[in-house]
Image 1 (cartoon, helix red, strand yellow):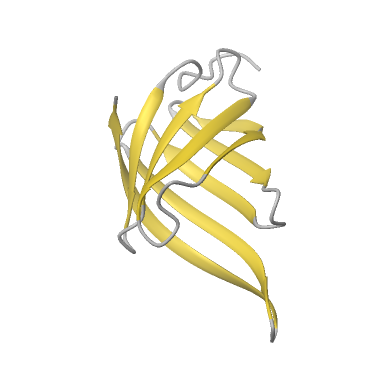
Image 2 (cartoon, helix red, strand yellow):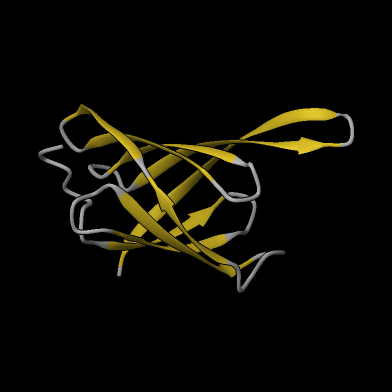
Length: 107
């Protein structure tokens, strides 16, 4: 994977629902360590393996599966420092999904 300009960098990701993450990408762009720093799960962290593709210059599609079974997909635009995030998870009523928008700030 070449041209993964987020590789080796860290960003503060502030989501429209009040949750804030510190995302640190591995040097080759295939791993992510996220830490939840604000919101209901503050203090949680995990290392995940990324599936990544560059959709356009500075625009990346990133996806992963968390230990909990939650699936996460980010459309990360480093030109505008925005992310459209979609995640799915199990509930007692079945699997559900949420779409969120957030901003990035380099750390």
